[in-house]
Image 1 (cartoon, helix red, strand yellow):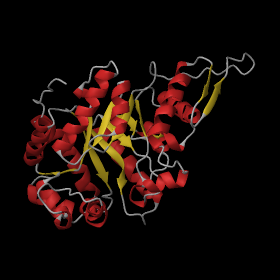
Image 2: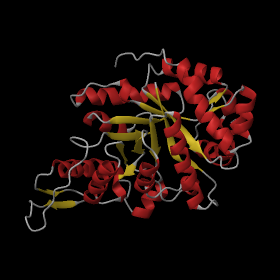
Image 3: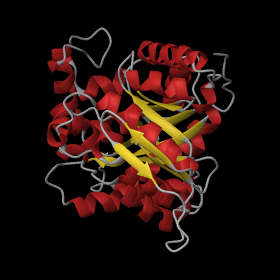
Length: 355
């Protein structure tokens, strides 16, 4: 199993963005030093709890401060940029990182972002069309495209301008990933049809199982072989030397604060529960840390991770959500260290099943 981090952190909206961005880069540096495989950077506009309007800026900065870890967008939100401009920014990042880059893309799930950009709930269709345009640009051949949302006229090579000549650093382009959160995600179906990497935001093993089933079926229909080794799964993770210490650091730290103040209410409004068997109105961060999240000593976290892995029938990379622990950075770095040095060896025996 591989390990990654999903950043920028969930942070207090009143925190200066420059401080939150610096924490995100610090976590990327720690991930690089400790041997994490990937760090993912989100894109959002209207949420103060994870303010990240330009993941390419953080990727570019992290590229100068790390040497090994793969830098990934989680994700570039295609409906909110012209696909031609985004295609070029992706190529530039691919070169800046010398191929140490995954171009995650997404439709954009936040209703307030959709309102800001006036996409009128057409985000899924815009993602599909935008990807078509971007792939044509990466091929480098002249083309014209008249779509439902965008029109593109990619020119022939001009001797005087000496262009267009830019091509991706990786061939034929950087690996493409698509994130999905719902059990029957349309984005995952798009990812499967094109053989892209699936990035799951799921709250239970059964949820994961449904996501993979839809993705795998779409892969086969698109002429691709689904590979669980490519599957990234995002989860809440915190490791300490003992269960008691880990739970205390979670419930008294920003991770617990964020869920008690925001995420639990989000699920309550939607009529769902983050804790199986617990009424939505009774869920607390303490219950989640005790019974649901990957929180505890290395032995406990490894046991829970093995259980989730087996219930989901396997995935390739665990991605730990980042939370703002600037008030206790040593504890957070220790959590990352234990995940790699103590949990990792305990799950190294896990093997992936078939489709």
